[in-house]
Image (cartoon, rainbow, N blue to C red; front, side):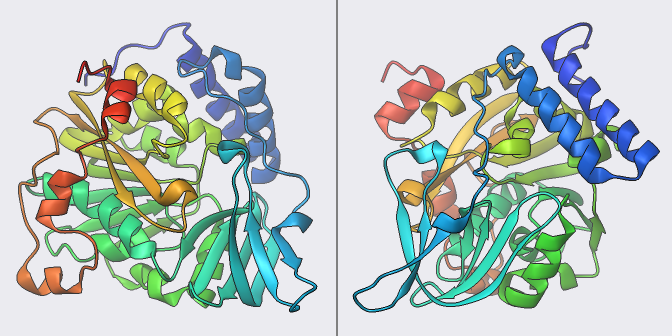
Length: 356
């Protein structure tokens, strides 16, 4: 393994917090208590994080999510967030289908007037029926088609099933494992988002309702591709954007393996992306950044951090979809695979320190 040893570093402190939280969960049979303590410890030591991630707590009140206009009595979902201050995004609501708080987060599903079904977690849009395919296809197919022969794939998060749906298009993959912490997201998606949750129907899929970091710690050098389909670094999800989590992924990869993680937006978050890329560059053989367009995400764009353990980079696919599969895809092509790594000059300079 290329993973450097952990002694008394900040990364070791954070990994220890994961172990403490899981010990508490085992002793008390309470995942909520364990994760509450983990989050508090993580927030208390956030200033020591290698990437110096800011703390973005989720809102305590979600009454602002839905409002009604007096002029025409229409209802609107209104997305505002600490990661994109000063801007907002609204969708007209046809019908609220589900709105409850799970053990971990606020979960909202509504049918919109022009974007189909919409899933919202802690006030942030996760997917809409209109454009989810661009994110799901690129998140899955960039690493999978960059790998010459992926057999075992791990998904962290992704409880809506969209990434699973895309992985299932690869007949050579023998095992698909998903670790989702919030079972409610899976259950709600199966009921209200079947166009995505059908990914769970594939017999190769094995579901684990647990912390992905703990699972990877128990499964070293096991996977060819690891995909982290996470929400934004708000609240407990902050740990998924810090170097200890990337070290856990590195340890769980086989030699020649590839990781692909949700990489935020170059228009809004280069101050988060750049230090993370810098921190994990010594760990992985290659670290690259790609992106896709998606209208319902902040600023209409989302990125992917893609890194390898041995082997070459991922900018050129080593395999291409069969003709029958390509006809089913609505965003991914081999050409757009390569094009997605071409960054605007400002983003290239900010993330990689390029002189261009």
